Image (cartoon, rainbow, N blue to C red; front, side, top):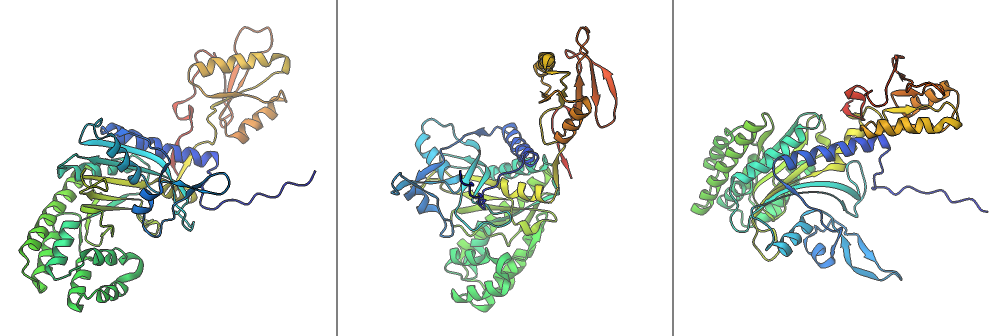
Length: 449
């Protein structure tokens, strides 16, 4: 029989070891709990969508994984690259059954055929929340989703996060007022500011016919930041200092954006202090967004980019209608950084709090019985795989990270034996129907590294 060829790992498809998977599950469960606490209903959609729907809404840089039928024929379906496209289809198909505003959260894997690198995967978890209305979406929803997401991130033992916010109405009003005709193109260029720098953005704007004076004003606008409403004065001062077209509609739109963003920042900071920052460099280049836009960074890990982003939109479905606002966390991106740098660690890699030792194989049923009684009370345990000397069984528990070893009583004795904390060496007589481990040892916990 020939040797099996060595398997080559597939890059971009994370498969965490047990201890790191515990961290991932902890993050997912925490998000799920906070979202549900705020009245968001969980949905799950199918993994595939028609290719024309995916291809029509994907950015050019996103490669959709297509399904292939037996025989090599490409099917008409592809794996979804985000959770917005399937959510839009879900709402469109079920609009008669849903209560609006519809508050939904969704935590699923998505797939993108892009070049894998740190924090970027081909298969990864996303966690989305959205509030969608049938016709009119109240402005307070823009605050609510930001607060819920900020609270979800605050529930994780993370470094501080900053949710940077802008408003597309503010930016569009300013751009129109200073004479920029193609606002969408200008926004796409400004959205690259963090990647290519101001000189390259200025060059792109110039290529779009934007004058040097206006381009300088656009770049200056993008430098304005504040953790409160003080940014309004800076924007209005810049407006007064820049030649404008006199477009009354643009000035009105600018005012709406300024007031809305000020309320948003102050409301979010009132609910989750120190979280929100008005940052007028946030553009979110997609034409999809029409109001508030958000990007969230982790303090000390800004190189990771945004871990959570989103915004307000006027139309969820392609045909129009269903305005909403939503935010999405790249969960795998976040978990990758947390585990690679030891920022979050599991206290142990196995669920078992107890290893029940085996005296000898003839009495394995005694150990099985003790384990069953412990499990009936919610104490995870396992029975030793062999009846080696107790010292060897303790070593086995130690290698597994199991904190307690239960030694059954000798045959013929009425009690259940003794349990040993193998870290401290403390050993006490115990009753399998009453003994419990300390709360911190009952199950694996995730703690700051």
